[in-house]
Image (tube, rainbow, N blue to C red; front, side):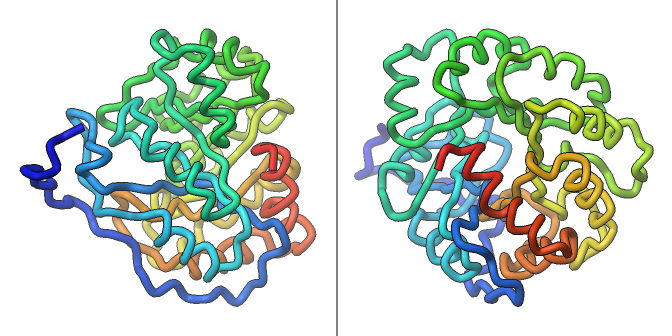
Length: 296
């Protein structure tokens, strides 16, 4: 750990979230879960990994909980971000804070992580391992997935993939061979401008046919340029929800690191109501599905 008496934090290179969360018009059900968010800092306690692609401002557990209560979530999932490499301390400390009903997704250095360490993570609330195939500085490659899956399957964990299906349109053939559930976040980074017949989205639709494949309906600003409502995301979200109604979940992606447009989380909550107008299905995506996936 750095010497805190002489430590000078790096200046943020990206903006922080909008602090004044608008209360959404749509009412979330009991057990509603934000299935994707990150916490950052303080830097002197949790230094960033060398070669990190960005420097986020501090985004504390207290700030996150304040936002969750504003939009009406009762549960949440903290996903370990790329800037910390395989040092999961910031994420694990947030889970252990007991400030909310948390679960977590860690980044595992599989060859150097013991079974005892995996069990400690499980006890803290980790229920998945993330493999990042897109971000600068990501340190776990797809080749690690089969070994990692064998080690985590007894605990009921899944593997979450952060990837760009536009550049990996055949990746589904490898994914479906894994002996654990898989989760695709951020719509697989499709580009809505390419249309629903594009290879990237067709990859997602093929994955919906497999009972172990789950999808996170998050981050419209990462796949669409139609600011601020991103209305062209709607048919893509509906198609996934209709094809896999029991395997879709939702999240805010708070504090929205490294994005071209900073949204208000209340607007994101209402956006889900536009994507999924059927209240029964929407409530399933918000509560019942994440309860199964994250073992709440």
